[in-house]
Image (cartoon, rainbow, N blue to C red; front, side, top):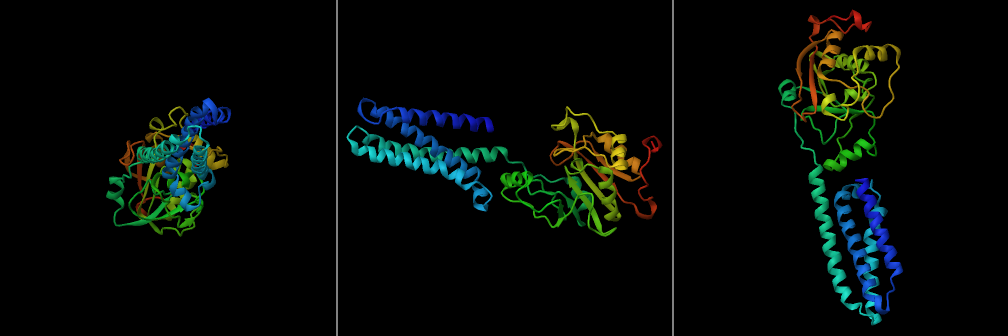
Amino acid sequence: MRRRRKYWLLGLALLLLVALLVPVSGENARAGGLTLLLLAAALSYLSGSHLITKGRLLRSGRGRSLLYAIPISAAALFLLSLLLLSYSGQGWRPFVSLGLAATVLSHFIGRARGRWRQEKKKVPARESALAHEYLDGLSGIEIGGSAHNPVGLKTINIDYTAATDTVYKQAEFEICGKCLRVAIVAQGDELPLFDDSQDFVVTSHGLERLPDPIKALKDWYRVTRKHGYLFMIIPHKERTFDRDRPRTDLAELVHRHRTGECPGSDAHHSVWITEDVVELIDYLGWKLVEAQDVDDKAGNGFTIVVRKDGSADAPPREVGDPATAPS
């Protein structure tokens, strides 16, 4: 996208340079008129495309309205130039009607192109049948929910910020035109909730973004009531942009939890395949009720379902040396 934008700006700059160099009178009057016409059409095309792809951001006050107003204003300015030059007697008059038609047509072509781009990048809002199988009729919390990745359950959304100007929220708004409301602002591994207060905790592509997954999991387990669930969809290393990164093993997770030394990253702190998280759940001594190697929501992750079995289940023990964990 940035590369295409660079080429557009370079092309417009060259056209503007030609317009400045070509005389607007004499033998080259028609060449000057054609250059101005092309500039007006190109700017009108950009304005149409931007108003569709960025329209919601502009209306919400989060877009750079001045930036997107420039193409429209410039196109109008070039058309006005053609109109004024049409009275110079240099053969400009035919360019006025032609320029107006080309500009309007270019604007609507740009709008059509913008709609096509929006449809192309839309993510199908598909819910997990497995989540509905376990969690329908219950109420719980979602960690880091988003409008374009709905779970379709009775949840309240918890996120580290309620601001809508973050990279993630702006992407969410551009994809589906709205942001999922944040009901509770808190870190995903420090939930301000009572013990045993929720039927379930659900997250889709959230656990890997927390630097200390063991701390997060233990906190989620704490707030889940007896016989409740932890339902997690986690990116699979081989089916995401993490495919070239090394897997995060259990020893690394235990080291982070014991020392607080966690990797700094704006992306995924941990990289897993299904077996890695199954091993982690087994190490914590929890009851794994389902492991879906290919999740039934987007297909680029895997699903882990843990049930808190109450009195029949020992509470999560303190994390020690992975070598002492049960096999």
